Amino acid sequence: MESEVAVVPMGLGHLRQVIDLGYQVFDTRTKPYTSWSLTSVAEHLDSPGRSCWVAVDSDRVVGFVLASMEFELRDDWAYLEWIAVAPDMQGRGVAGRLMTACCDTLFEHGARRIVTDVEVHNAASASMMRKNGFSEGTTVTLFVRPNPDEAGSAADDQIALGPGTKRDLIRRGRITGDGRHGRPKG
Image 1 (cartoon, one colour):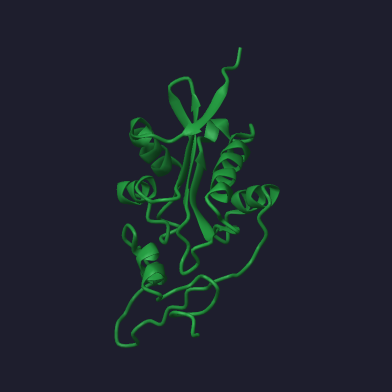
Image 2: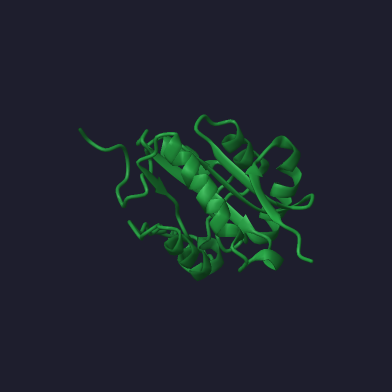
């Protein structure tokens, strides 16, 4: 008999399992801009307009989604930053149920749009986003120019952003996620 997976609001009691599942599922070596950390999770739990949910099978966290009403310079747009499902639970509708709970809450908080980003090679995540009502908006490419006086390898071109760096760059107006740099004029 298969147990029932419940989707419930994330609480502090889920924190350790959420962190561990994130480290199991996210490959920060190939996606260096995804700075998974305790700080990142805590920012979501501590933000107004948060939408943090976990999927629980018995006492085991098998999935989570973390989002908030903080997206760049738009107060009426939300940002879904993290979603993960344990590998042995994928393909069972857990991600869809997490997305529904998360998005419903963000719309209740006043979101007109919900934005997320997907690494270009993550076809499974892109497909899941499309199945849940998201459509492709803007593609942002990070261009890197090496110092010609320094010898280096292609591996040196991978940038490992520390915890919160991407979010900090967005908050300071250095990146906007829509192909422009800096704060919008006007």
